[in-house]
Image 1 (cartoon, one colour):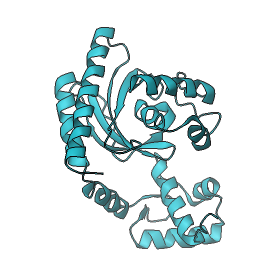
Image 2 (image 1 turned 60 degrees about the vertical axis):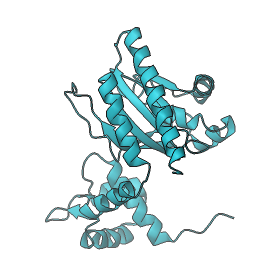
Image 3 (image 1 turned 180 degrees about the vertical axis):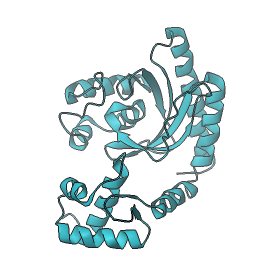
Length: 253
């Protein structure tokens, strides 16, 4: 039997998740449309969240967005993660060797959550990644982590059809399953413009947990020459395996 959720607590979390997922502030009507909650209870919850600084609003209370206390909670999650300092050092080394942007992320059900990023020094349009949550099937990070699961587990986890982010996104679950078979065979994932146009990415799982929950990736221009892509792949494999060995040696689980 599945545990019974406390309705007010569940609604509070859904509201915060909805606001966090939106690139702009939302009106009460938009929140109601996206959550499906009754206007009366939604209004009361929003008033409480604003008073507690979990949600910000304007003077007229016409639009709402995530507040500062949400940041405090997210920062606390990062602060307590014993693997993160080692992963950050790995990202520094990887960026130094490849000159490309490096990421460290963790699987969150059917998504990946970015915990650390080191941007390429040549990046002209830096998109903040830490704290972002993206569908697992559109990223190399996500693909390499859901490849840790069985086909039945993947089918139960992901929607069908899959959400399209770009014209190159794999939206057919059967095609994704075939791609995951290749990922399992070679030990790393590679995607080209599936999540972001003009960008390719390679990812390797950090093998200090079974199944792996974390991965390291390196993103690069999609038109990078094949020989340079090969060098990036080799670097990600080498540095990620080294990170996994370090975490196991330090007893971090």
